[in-house]
Structure formats: structure tokens, C-alpha cells
Length: 503
Image (cartoon, rainbow, N blue to C red; front, side):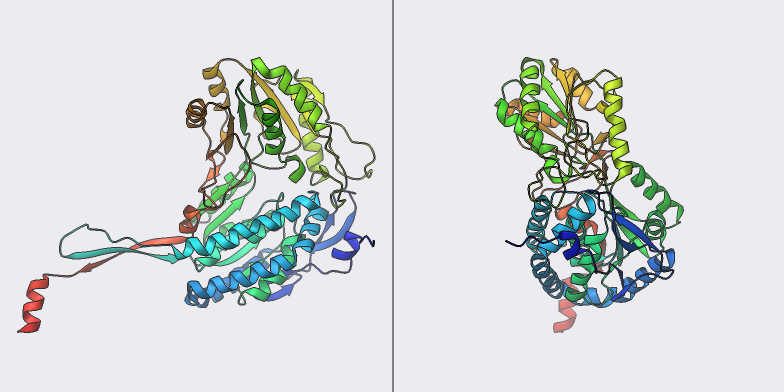
């Protein structure tokens, strides 16, 4: 059997360019930046770094294309999305391998990311077809109804941890509602998004989708543009706050949705099936998907004292089965973190956890048998964690699990809700009355009961407090890309009109 070299097949000899107004381009100033493979630390290619001039060109192209795209109608837009879905399926392996090479996520998990897109390709057209306006009985002798119009040009800035998935699914609700798009992927993981430009070019009219790659200056040009009224962002809380501030400073009111960080709690009651709950804790950390680099990971595990020691011991033993290795090696369960800078950050938390008195049960070091330059961290499990420790209250965004002990229900709820983050949470118990009581008291935008981290298209996903604004993957998101207007018609007295007409 012939084994391909992923780098040779999918990166070497391939040009990665931005996509503006239907044209592939290196950008106005031809500036490029290195792309490093986190599995080896080596530079594997370069990508363009957009300037403000490039972003302005992309916005102008999107603005020019928008009226015709809106006029195409829902059925015409759905046909383009269907064509795009077909192309994504055909390029599944390429996109998955590029993400493994670029962001370090295990390749089989990235195949799963592409497969999950099917729910979005099916879901958005169905939701769009079901959209309705309202007739409002506000007054006698008049007709009041609502209608929707797209914003025009939408800006979308995506996160590094699921590059292809975000670049495929996040544009869909804005596009199906008649908006055109300027999208910027994270500057840490751009390869699959730039590769997707080829598929967008084949499936959509010129200028409908525009893709720029670059850093903070390119993102700022999107956020502050007078022509972009609607912005969607997935990423960190500090960047989300900066986007809000810069949008306000631009002097233009903007509708902004933010899917931000989480320090999500998994609350475990003493009546659970221990093995099932431990498997849920591992699954909910997304270790074998993105090394715990997920805003939805349940990194705070709140375990009742009656089963605490047994839970920790079983969790430690089960973590031993996960193999850390090169992301595009089929036998790898957990890949490297995305960059050297992020490796430094995660390790600083591991060091802080030890220094502040938590018990490092396992992991946290560099695994054996991996390339020297790669950004590998053996999944770390801490016990005896308390809220005053950094690992207990700050989002680490890496393969670090913190287990808290509790025996007082009210104190545990207060501890879970003490942080300014509230993206998600999960509750594990066989008593549904307790489960729903607890779910109601947790300050989080999405709560799983005896499950975690899975998304179900059609259910609104988003955070409370500093974890974000708006809801995604649902009718809420679809409507958020449309401006609502009310139309009033004075009908007059129909009896008088009829009398005049009939003489």
C-alpha cells in the first residue's frame, strides 16, 4: 500500500492566495507570512498578509455584487449553496489534511468537521424557506406587516481551532439571506480557508464571497468599515471587547455577534454511572478533536465528594489510552497545540497550577517519541483545584482538566456562577428533577444534561455574560442577518370605497 506524504501532496507546490472580487491575489503590497506546521515547528509555506487596501477592495467587490445576489432570490441562492456543498464533499480529504497540517488537530477529527457540515447544508435552506413576516392587528382600517432585508455586506472573522468548519458553515446564514461576505480566518490557521476560496469561486457569483488573510490590521479594517453593518466573530473575550470598541469608534452603528470564551463547568452528582460520567468528561474536553482548544470544553469538573477520589482515579487511568503525536498520523488521538506561543501559554498555567497547590495527577509534560520542534503537551489532569487558583478561574484553551470537590449544593452553584464567563455547562445525574433545577440555576447560554459539547443544528448556541452576544446555528442567527422593517398601509373605509366603485 502506498502512503502519501500529506505535506508533499497538499502543501508543497501549491499557491495559497486571497480571493477578492472573483480573482486570486497576493495582495497590493505582496507581503507574505510564514506558516509553521505545529507537529514539527517547521515552516511549510507562506500565505498573503492583507493590507487595509486589500480589505477595502474586498468590501467594494462585495458591495458591487450584493444587489444581484439579493435579486437572485432564495431558490437561486440555495442552488449555489447546494453546488458548494457538493464541492466540499469532493474535497473532504484535502480540507481535513490542511487543517491537520496547519492547526495541529488530528486528521480524523478534521474529517469529522467536514462531515458535520452536512447538517448545516441541509438546515439553512430549510430554515430560510420557513421564514415568515408578521401581520400585526395594531389598528382598525389599516394594514401593518413586517418585511426583512439583508444588511448588504457582512464581515466574518473566524477562530483558529476549526478552520475549515468555520469557513464553510459560518458564511451560510449570511449568504442565504442575500448578504455578500468579506471573511478573514485566524492568522494562525489560514490554509483550508484559502483553499476553500477555489470552491467558493466555482459555486458562487463573482464578488459574493471574498476572503482576505492577515492579522489584526486586516480585522480592524473589516470592523471599522462604513460599508459593513453586520459583523460575526468567533474568538477570545479580549478580542471581542476590542471589536465592540473599535466598531463604536468607527462612528457607524453595527450589529455584532460574538461567540467568545468559556470556563465551562461539568457538574457531577453522586448518583451517576461513574464510567459514563468519566467518558463524558473526556469527550467534553475535546481532547481528541482540538487538544482542548475549544471555548466549549468542560475544563472545570465539579465532582461530589462522595465519588471524588474514585472519579479522579478512573479519569486518570482512561487518559492514559490517548496517544499524542503528529496531527496527520492516522494513529494520533491528540495533536500538538497550535503554536509555540500557545504552548508557552498553556505551560504557564500548568506551572501555576502546581505552584498554587493543585495536585497534578498526570500529564502536563512533553510526551516521548514526538518531533522535537512540535508543540506537544501530554493532557494534564489536576485535582484539588479551587476557585482562587488561575487554573480554576481562567480559560486555558488547552489540554488541562481541573477537578473541583463539592458537597454543598448552594456553594457549588455559587462557585460555578462566580466567573464572568457563561458559554456552556453540563449536568450529570440520573435524577431529572435535580438535573433541570441545576440547569436552570447555572449561568450559561447552553446546558447539556448527561451529555456535553455536541451541537445540534436548530438549537440556538451562544453564551451569557462575557462569553458572547447573539445565538448561532438556529433561526435566531438567520434573522440576525436581516434588518426588519414595518410597512403600514392606510386602507380607509372599505364600505365607502365599495359604494363609490359600484355607484
